[in-house]
Image 1: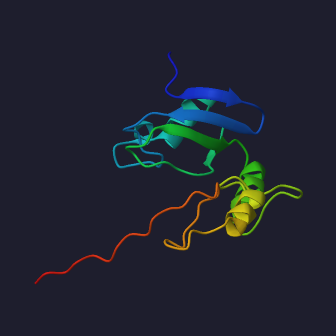
Image 2: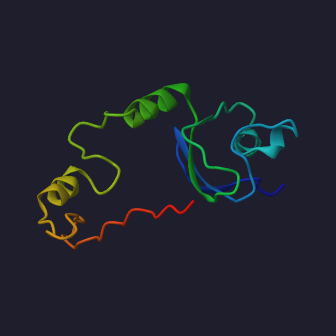
Length: 132
């Protein structure tokens, strides 16, 4: 039988899956094989109790992480909670704290009063005109 999911990487605790567009992550009324999480036990074996660590919309393709154990799922979800991070690690979004601090220190243009992380100016949008 061919694989129902595209496994990128797998170890004892985690499966990295390439989700195709058009496939939902959570089960639907159409049956267990209609969703990504429903297909994982078929490929990994019925003893698996996979837990999605995040999801992608039906229309979105990309990488999805699936924990094989509840303990792994809890540990990784705890790291992804707002304002939490692994010891010694920077924020995972937008290039880390150093990039954010650099953006705050970047010189601003007097006309636009806007900056980017690289110091380039970004023109501010003008107010929308309303004609009634």
